[in-house]
Image 1 (cartoon, one colour):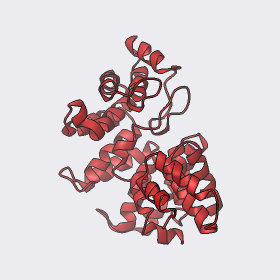
Image 2 (cartoon, one colour; image 1 turned 180 degrees about the vertical axis):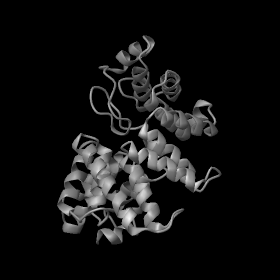
Image 3 (cartoon, one colour; image 1 turned 60 degrees about the vertical axis):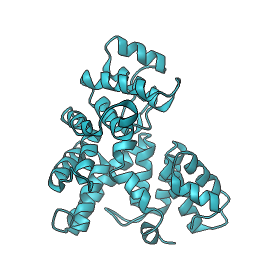
Image 4 (tube, one colour; image 1 turned 45 degrees about the vertical axis):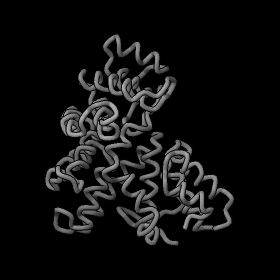
Length: 293
C-alpha cells in the first residue's frame, strides 16, 4: 500500500493527531526531567518530582510546570489531576508561558474532572501565546480552526503564522494544508509547498535534538512529496527514533512502512503492540486482528 493510499485510510487519524486540533491535548504529554521535554521544550533543571515541588515552593515557575507534568503523568508520584492543576496554575500565574500551554491542555483534556470549565482554555492559551510560547499559539489556533462555536479561520491562520514564525513545525504544516486545500485562503500549491518545506526543516531539527513527536511528524512528511522529495529510508529512520522515544504514532507508522516492505516482517506486531500501549486506538485494533489492514 502506498503512502498516498494510506493517507486515505488508517493513517488519516495520525495526521489529525500530529497536525490537528488534538494538539490541544497532547501538548501536555512527553515532558520529563533533566533533558529535552518534547512538546513543551526544555525540561526544568530539577532531578525529580519532589525536587520540582521544592523549586516551585521557592518561586521557580518552570519547576512548578514540571511538578504539574509529573503529577499529570504519574512520574515519580501518584498520578493526580488535581495536583497537576495546582502546580500548572501556579506556573502560569507566575508567567511561565509553557506552563500556561500545559494548563490550557489540561483544562481541555480534563476540565470537568478538576472543576474548571473548558471555556477558560482560550484565555489561558492566549496568555501562553502572548508570552512567546509557540505551542500555545498553535493550540489556540486549533480551537479557532475547529468546527466548534469558536471557529474563526482568519484568526486561526494568524495564530498559526505566529506559531510557525516562532518555530512550530506543526503550525507551518497547518498553514500549508490550508493553502493546499483552499481552506480560508485561495488554493496556492506554491505556498503550500513553501510552508511544508519550513515544517520539514523545523520538525527534522526537533527530531535531531531528541524530540520524539517531531520525529514522527518529520517522518510523515518525508513519506510524501510535501515540501521536498520522498525519502522512505529517512522517514523510517525518523519513525524509529520517534518510536524509541515512546511516540505512539511513530511506532504505528513504522509498522506500516515495514509492512509495505514485507508483510512477514516479525517487527510489525511488536511495533503495533507498543503503539497500542502508548494509547493509539488504531494500533490496538490492528494488534487485536493481527493485521494492519
